[in-house]
Every structure is written in C-alpha cells, then in structure tokens.
Length: 95
Image (cartoon, rainbow, N blue to C red; front, side, top):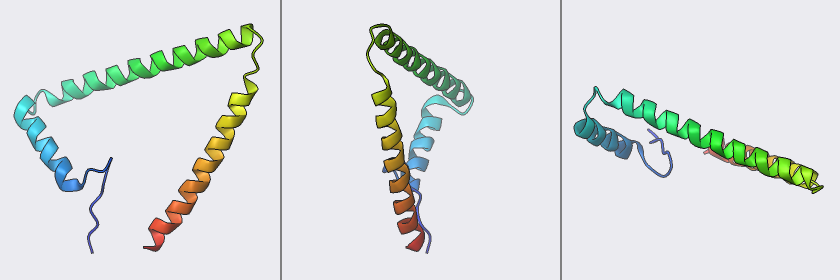
C-alpha cells in the first residue's frame, strides 16, 4: 500500500498542483529568486523575534523579575513534547 505524505494537512497531489501553478505563474527562472527572498524574509523575522525576546529578558532581569520560572516551564513543555512525539511515533510505526 502506498501512503501519501501530508504536510500541513496538504496531501502530495495537492503539493504538486500548487508547484505547477507557481511554475506557470512565475516561470522556472524566477522561482530561485522568490525562494531566496522568502528565505531572507523568514531569517529577518526570526532575528527580530530573537531580539525582542532578548530585550524582554534583559528588561525583566534589570527590574528584578525572576526569569527562571519561564525556563522551568519551557523545560517541562519540552519534556511533554518529547513524550508526546515518542508516543505518537510508536503509534505511527505500528500501523
């Protein structure tokens, strides 16, 4: 049995259709430039988000606010996420 891969609830045929439409609209020569621009935009957004997080943390530390609790919460969330991935991974493998 062949399984169709899904990404963000989009199946493989839908991904191919979207790629076909993109190639038809923009042309094969322009796609690398578009992807490069999207990559730069995503990197800029990620850098801006990290700068904002850093400024908030720095401001909280300067005002005497305990930031350890957020680190502990993030650690617990990561543990739960890992446990969930292990659980769902075993279910996916057994199908």
